[in-house]
Length: 182
Ligand code: 5GP
Ligand code: MG
Ligand code: MG
Image (cartoon, rainbow, N blue to C red; front, side, top):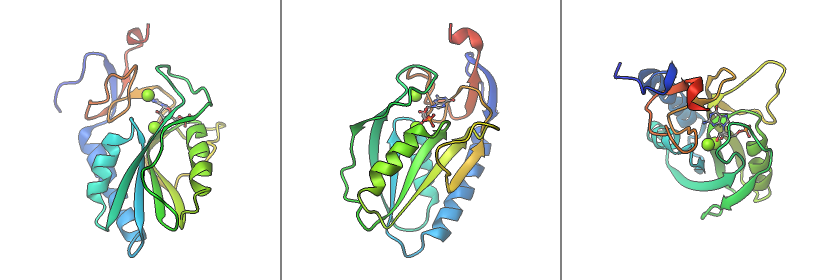
């Protein structure tokens, strides 16, 4: 493997593992959306890397659009408050919408988004999340149809995920060294 960033303590998912995960999800979605009117909606900014890979792994016609919401700021904890910063450019009425997310933790962000998007009457509305912090005793507010992989209850970076807007470009997912936070 190539060199690991000095701020990263542990690599959780390597570039090769990520590629295999995305391939599997792409195959599944390709099968499930044959003959449908698929729209992938990525939530900026964290999901852009996953979106770029996933859309190329899906072999059925699709469109893409983006939304930006703010809920986290630069902190490592959810505020539970979600605000739409950038809305869709597209009309999703009657279309088969798949929300593409980088990571599902509390699910508060997605719950809000799903409620908002379902009020626009898509034909279907599902979620594909690359990571799921599926922690025992901590139920997420939503149930994603497609899950890349489960993730431990740590703050992770890379593959689109940031800490204070850094580390999004790391090609793997890792845990930062504690001293980076302080
Ligand atoms: P939720 O609303 O599900 O608690 O969190 C949603 C958002 O919080 C994610 O889309 C992501 O932007 C951010 N987030 C949650 N956990 C992590 C994490 O471990 N690392 C990073 N970088 N962001 C996270
Ligand atoms: Mg996200
Ligand atoms: Mg972030």
